[in-house]
Image 1 (tube, one colour):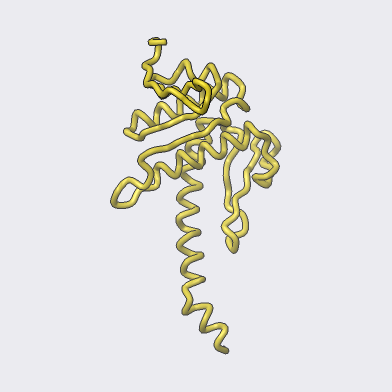
Image 2: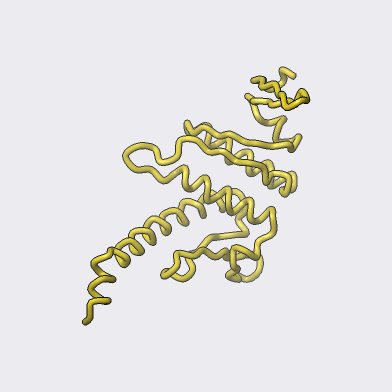
Length: 168
């Protein structure tokens, strides 16, 4: 054994990879619970343990293992949402993620999937998490109880208002 081997172990690379792998396994398990509710067609699995990659198992395609980059916009959004929801469930001593902000992506979803996504966000909010959504999708706006609206006034000016659902 030379110095290079000693350096590999002493630098903590192997331990760091192991610890990150354990965390990723937990994250994937939590994400799959959310993904099952959002779209039972997909399931996340770990790829090569050496690089902490993820793949998607497509149940409708005979359990085909797909690269995450092969997902369409709507599929990618659902998988990302499941991962974000899973991240909000990772907890240590204090809550790991107390607030979740989502910027768009809802426009790529069909009506049924949009309902599933909003239901998941409402469930998360019901568990005490704060959820912020930036959207222009009318169906989303209708379901958001309290809204912070930003309206352009021209000449670089905007007006910010807080509106409760049904109030305008």
